[in-house]
Image (cartoon, rainbow, N blue to C red; front, side, top):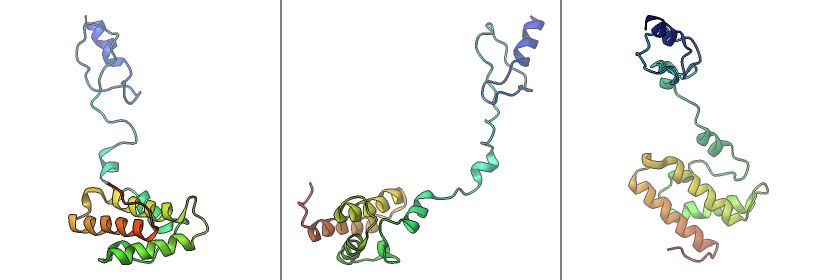
Length: 143
């Protein structure tokens, strides 16, 4: 049995694919790989605590599809937000879809990426801006 225990602890760690220097639990069968509580390489605690770059912020700031007015999503007037998005979408020559699709896509992108961090009052203003955008482009109302 002592020989088997030595074999189990000398097996490679299933996650890290490195020798596991921690004592492995006794197993009746050697077919199952030992479990190592050590995290995978590249996923250390220090790395998860560090701030990661926000790709969505980068897209919002540097998107070539629409050139937005600064602070457009912080305005309190839904009509003003919708009118600004419409102007930006119609002026853009690098969009892939129609101006309506581009404007609505950018507004939805902002709402979806904000997620739970978006206060209810702010979400309400942006949802009203979506309705105004539909009206400006003469799209049929939804739901």
